[in-house]
Amino acid sequence: MAEVLVLHGSPGSGKSTLARGLALALSAADVAWGVIDLDELSLVHPYPGKGFARDNLRAIWPNYVATIPHIKLIIPMVFDNEQEVELVRAALPGARLIIVETTAPVAVLKKRVTDREPTEDVAAGTRTWIDLYHARSDHERIRHFQVTTHPARVDESVREILNLTGWLS
Image (cartoon, rainbow, N blue to C red; front, side, top):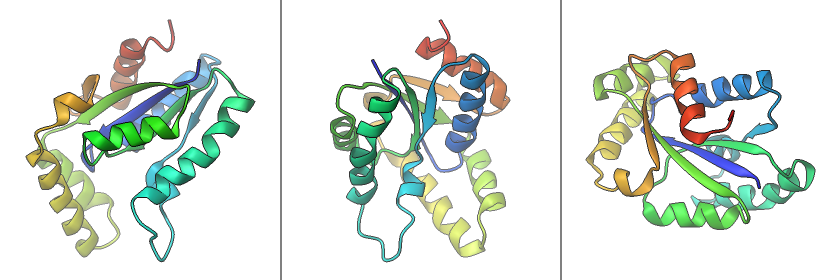
């Protein structure tokens, strides 16, 4: 059965970095994997709306499982709410969905996004998203596991996720 690991968390929490680290670890263990970044699937102008990335995911998912039936797929993204979990699940028929929330202290998150964003306006907007994310009350209902990405190194967080998922067992 194909399994999908969703790395869900605040902007700056290390989702994309962990996706790359997990891909390297799975490759080293000769485990079939793929990464689909929903933010990347949404890079289009004019932006057609939130459902666009899920529609793209639904369209390409059958090709992944037809080509590699037991794939371990990694999706870095932010669930807006609990209902979005079900929408993503519906876009991935037949997959076992595992949701790991990635976390770090708010000050660390804001520093990370300030350092990475191309302009101060973009960084300010992303810092606002961090505040909105942390004001939510649904995190425990969305996630299966939680992994802290600070002060942990990437390889430590990757190892923790692989242990939690059992992907190398």
